[in-house]
Amino acid sequence: MKKCLIVVDYQNDFVTGALGNPDALKLERSIADKIRQYRDNGGAVIFTFDTHSEGYMQTQEGRNLPVPHCLQGTEGHMLFGAVNGLALESDLKFEKITFGSDLLYAHLRQTPYESIELAGVVSNICVISNAVLAKTAQPETPVLVDANCVASNDARLNQAALDVMASLQIKIV
Image (cartoon, rainbow, N blue to C red):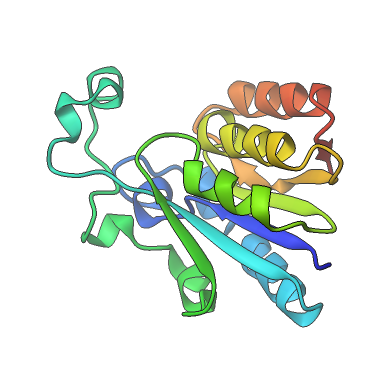
């Protein structure tokens, strides 16, 4: 069995685009280093992509967060910077229309890993959602989140998300 790294939504719109923030920008090097580390050790790297269509503003999310972002086929939908350059054609990539990825969950139910680690954005929305899905899919597999590889646009909510994940037996490193 190998270890798995899930890079959650480290896309242009969350770093420098429509919903970008300086804390997300600061993650580029640490996430890139983590991807290299997993590759060097034979681990799996999976990417999730927040993915919306032109009808985003008519969705529940669009009504609650009226900022079009990560529209499929746009620059904002692409992975950011060095992380984009590290994504391989062979890596699993899951587009998702909501916070958690049902396709990621299905994959994790079928593919046992030694451990599952998450990095990316937004910690209090998509990272926590997918961490819970990973823990649900593989309850006996250690699920980890590196606090230096996640961010939110609100430092208070970032810390709250880390605290909640820790309470769910997700190891914060």
